[in-house]
Image (cartoon, rainbow over all chains, first blue to last red; front, side, top):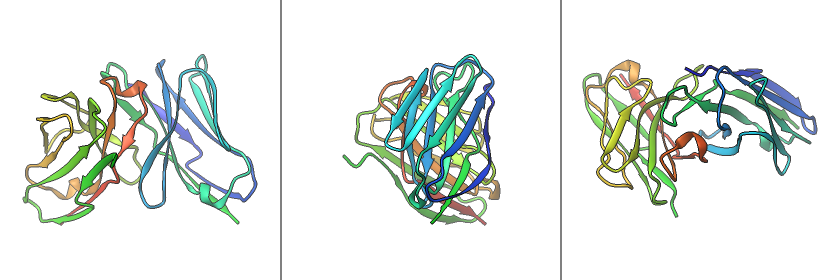
Length: 110
Length: 115
């Protein structure tokens, strides 16, 4: 079974700061997912990546396959970025299902 | 497209009652899944389906049943509710059968309280 660990669990930042959230997994994967859970509870997919880096607006996701590690960066953070960020990786022998990390709760203060 | 819809948004049950959580998607997605989210834990897979007529168990299937008679609908049945099933339930879908290699589309969630 793939183990997915996120750090930190909680993160408080001032508006404008550069933010990094980390994710490590134990089993080699085909794709790693980053998701955002809004304060209201809804979950949206941010990125799916299997190598290198992806960028969408102020969000950047990177992955190092050899080290089994991924990071989510937020540049010029804003209070509207406050949310729980979740990474997920395929479970071993799981027929395509995902194992989710416990999430990182981000709070950006104005 | 409405995307993935779930009903009800919130439900209170008494121990021993049964109910069905509804999930529907209008994107013609093959893969659908049910997760539960509990405080301090990651989303955990309950049941999933890779297509109409095909379902399988996930990590925490006990106490739940599913069926997939159409591509659009994937209801989750609680057979005899227990307080341990108090949770927030999310339905998700992906276009093809390989869920882990595709973008996940989530429903808004159903908050269930079992007394």
